[in-house]
Image 1: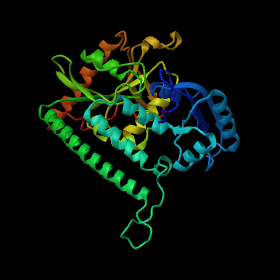
Image 2 (image 1 turned 90 degrees about the vertical axis):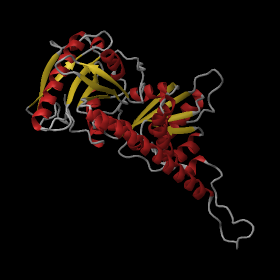
Image 3 (image 1 turned 90 degrees about the horizontal axis):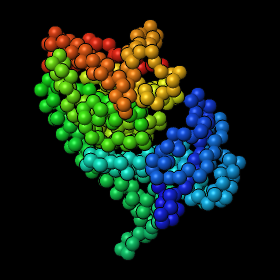
Length: 401
């Protein structure tokens, strides 16, 4: 991300741009992109939204809208423009030349936030891998010295290896080394999971859209002090603690995982495979939803899509509608534990407030019953680990809760 525009002690300002290509749930106010920008430390100066049938191959938004953005850039004095969609290297380069300022997209913005927030060795490795993969596609745009060099003294004359080829080779070597280091971390996690399985541990993972309140719920359940804040991607590194559910169900391993988001860059999905594997290997997922967010059904769909991508689509789930305290009075449920019908399937959900504790006793009772039932099934089937061998998921991969 460009930082040259930041004066000392001044918050860098940006213009946000979103293009509606006819999608049903287009973020007309660019609310989420604005939150991402604020999380990364930017001040939003203005927002530009337009409609197109397809991206312009050269400028993404077309010449007319690019002229409008340029007028805003000049009048507001901003030095950076952020697009809500991913830009190709050519579009990014053309827009920077046309607008005369740095242009970046949603992908790099998320990478910037992840780089700021990663704390563990594994998290930093994952972010570095994703960053290297992203930069490798933008070598032509990012370095002015990438031009064809002549062979040096002692060569027969033809053109030597290009600087861009040298940089690509160095990047490829860095990506390879980072992958190897991450593979070691992944093996260590696998060993830890095998040790938990030998101890007959029951593994529960908190998943959900970013800022749904997973870390706050995690802290409330296990009395931990994991970092929690009202911002996107407050937690990047997986934290695991023991949760005691009484004599009936005993203790379970509860893990707090990284939050999901719309259009999560594929490089991040791949890079964070070791962390997200906690969800894929869980016996039960607690799918945390921000019930106060009017777009929470769309967020549920996004989370389910990512869970399918990482092989966790079939892991049983319980829906937790969090932030009950922030819901409007007319939206409050009649009961904290209820069910809803979708395609003839009854789905159970629990309304909670991690902030004030409402619904947590009901959640613990439901967890106790679910874990005890899962262990009974494992004992009956003779399985060595407490999976759900014949258990149907508690929520279908659907468009509604």
